[in-house]
Amino acid sequence: MCLGSIFKSAAFARVAAVAAALIACAPRPAAAQEWPARPITLLLSFAGGGIMDLATRSIAHDLTEALGQTVVVEAKTGAGGIIGVMAIKNAAPDGYTFLVSAVGPMVFRPLMETGLGFDATRDFTPVIIIGDTTNAILASPKLGVSSVKELSAYAAKHQNRLNIGHPGVGTMGQFCGALLAQKLGIDGNLVAYRGAAPIVTDLLGGQIDIGAPAYGPDSSAVKVLAVSSSERLDSMPDVPTLKESGIDMECSTWMAIYGPAGVPGPIVAKLNAAIAAYLRKPETRKAFSNVGLRVLGGPPERLRDRAIADTKVWAPIIRSLTPAK
Image (cartoon, rainbow, N blue to C red; front, side, top):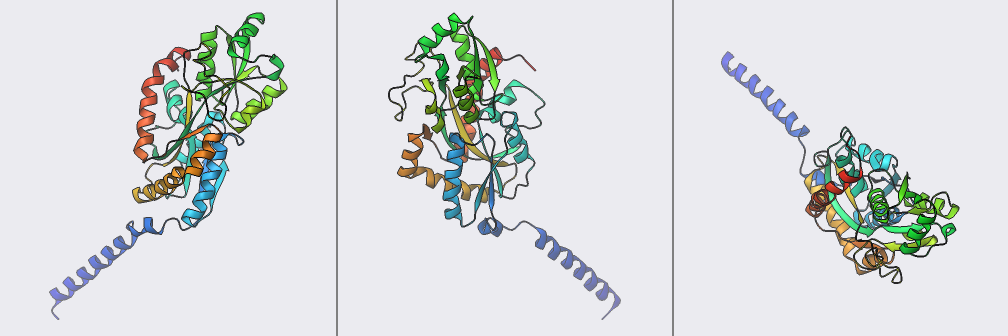
């Protein structure tokens, strides 16, 4: 073999070796088909005991069977859900860690302040909107009130100052409580919690006067004065809406599942399909309805569109209720 042919053969061998290495390292479409190959974690951004906790664990149980891998629920609470948001932002986009969050952290907080460390539209992959639930106006039994009208009268006798519990800074509960106080002429002291369950505990103990969390299974432990949905809940037909109580306002908290930015599309599609199938089951819809959760589901685009719509509706209200930062 001539010298030129030897050089050409050697060069070809080197190029072939490099090409083989690149092919071996390149992402394989089959990886999505193999997913999941190990347990999946759902990070819960608010404290357990509320409707988000109930829905998340129910979904995790079904996914464990549907996907053939254990789906673990892990609490990652604090800062009005932002601790969980930052945890998922920094997670690997490999399809094994997802976040269950709500309208507050994903829509409201970016409207309230800059410098949060994330961009809600750029840093996350929408998976599915689970559903929404009305915010309920809860009262401590120690107040002895049974309606919004009686609450207003009670406040008037106590210098219009009430302690109002909500599930965290930037949540729908915070703005629902603040807007209610504004409409009732109450000088409310807003108290932040890590979810709905601690609010109920402090209402029972009399540490706070009223609360405005998303309605959940534990809400019935205290007096439910009204719900902020457009219609009464099937599970509480005797509880009036705020509009029926003379207060023209509606509030609902949606919950949804997000991944970090960059989760492969086929994995998102497979997870969305599995959860959507569970949410379509009549028994699922009935069970969730019984605790006040309206099932939504649908493709990832439905979650994206809901977040955009809520931004438009609530941006002016939030700016009027909170100082600029």
